[in-house]
Length: 124
Image (cartoon, rainbow, N blue to C red; front, side):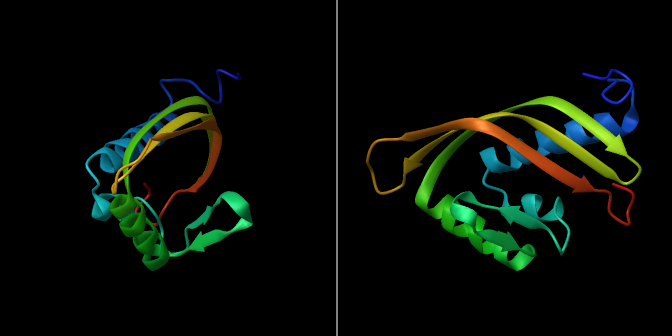
């Protein structure tokens, strides 16, 4: 890992890490409004199976269905953050356990994830 690009003293890297922690906290409390505050109007989520979800209204609907269908335990560890101007790339490992709201055995998903982030006009 390039310490110059992922230095803990870099305020941009610290902000990316803060955003990731805030995201997980909002998921734990099922706070869809907080999640939506962290995405831009033109945000795109790439989903399993080749689908994509684009825009805040679609992301809101996704999380309403998701939280209505499952109990969620989500852990993520950032392995690396690279910041270039208004863009950041971060990747790491994730583990998510989904428990159906209607009962049934939980399913655990584990793997790697990557996010491409763009600083908003509010400079966050």
